[in-house]
Amino acid sequence: MSKLQRLEPPKYRAIRFTAIGGIPYKVGEEFEGGGVWPNLAAVEPINGTARKIADYLKRYGASRCFPPRPRSDVFGCYYLPAALSTGSPVHEPSGTRDSYPQHESPRDAPLYIASHRVHFANNVTIAAGKTFAWLRWPREGWRSASPSAVAVVRYLGQWGGKHPHPDLERLIAPYCELHGLFLPPLRPLEKPSTAPAVITDFGILDDTGALT
Image 1: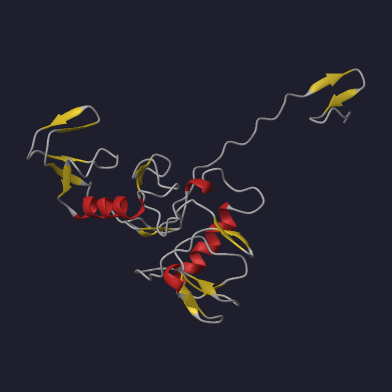
Image 2 (image 1 turned 180 degrees about the horizontal axis):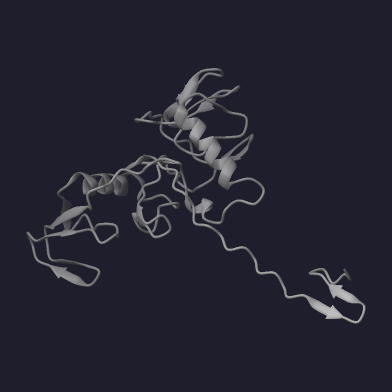
């Protein structure tokens, strides 16, 4: 699992009268973000965390996959999934596909090698057999080419599979624009309770109704 770095809470300054969580702020007052998206018409970011959140809002705010809040209640921290899809399918003669991500390679980005060409936005293409950074979940058949990619694949093996953990779908991407590689441990699931034994004159009924 990746160890999350401790972030300074996002802080903003009101540039006009506004309210966050029902608390009013006058022009010039400074305050923390409260886990919600900032109204950039009314506030300005004043620290690094807030600036990254504001940049993320400007870049991905129109996406249909845009997170409802920058702070995830599931993971208990701020989480800005990288390479966010537009959420609108792209229709081509070969079929429907998702939007391509921008080609970028930030620190600790997972690196992979594919046996086919890999496409990015703005007509960027990586040839088969070449190493490339990919911030979304990897596709089947790709080979890991960095420790970060190995960690992503192992994480999917632990929490995914035929019966994936229900919180895995909340993890839109394994890379976060605040934390970098983002592979938090998922909450333990309660095991279903076993029905009490039913004793009859002919034996004990199991969960399927058969005599044992």
